[in-house]
Length: 336
Ligand SMILES: *Cc1c(COP(=O)(O)O)cnc(C)c1O
Image (cartoon, rainbow, N blue to C red; front, side, top):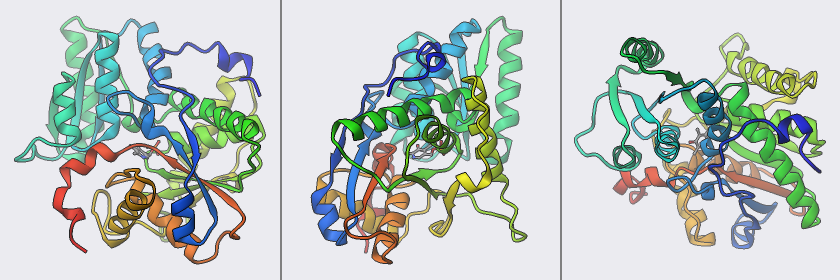
């Protein structure tokens, strides 16, 4: 199915190698005893290795360039894949890049942090809760010095960034048609929400029949059942549809977020994440990362063992690309 006209002609800076591969994972499937697992390899988008932020950045960079920006500002954790990909996108387009990182500079510069520096980004360390405010302050300061800064929200998660995953759902749908595959469920990690919002919007627009199931990395409902995060994902998904001239009409019931696998919190590696990294590595020769994809895969593994899917059903595990962060965790993955 072709992209809707408005999406096909939306300004976009080419950064990603797409379509990313979609391939079976037969030995992982066998180890789980089903369902049949396919891997969608957004770890191979190719920008300073790859990852899901690259698809969002194609749209965000075009927006930044249209606004006359000469400098990108974004924020994340010290091992942020989003920051790494933003630094690479800035380098490739000749923009300056300022990263606001939450926490203290670690003793050793490794993993994504090392790559941020090699990609020429300027690092600004602030306490984690101050990241948004610090981005605004930095933007004002740079504007005062005669620059034109462009602030990309954490994770690149807004309606423009999410268009990257609307395109990605059309891409998946085209691959499934080409390979004559039917998919019951797509499983992916969710944290700042833009990827999920784009997938949900794209699924609606391209008529994807399966379920999109997000495994929450760090977001959960309040005790009273309100779930501000799901509301935010729904709003971004509807805004993305509206940008494309569609009414959207996405409601809470269209958004499936499982928050049973939060473990020890954001960036804390536990036994399920360790098992997931090893299982994928030893069965498929594919590396998943410490913070996002190992947790999402651990969720898929547990759900499979609980019989969530029949052995003949097909599940796509969407690899969103964080294996570069493994290098900052080192021996945490070697203890059992
Ligand atoms: C950012 C990220 C996610 C989550 O995507 P959001 O759009 O922030 O929800 C998943 N996996 C990896 C590897 C990421 O870096």
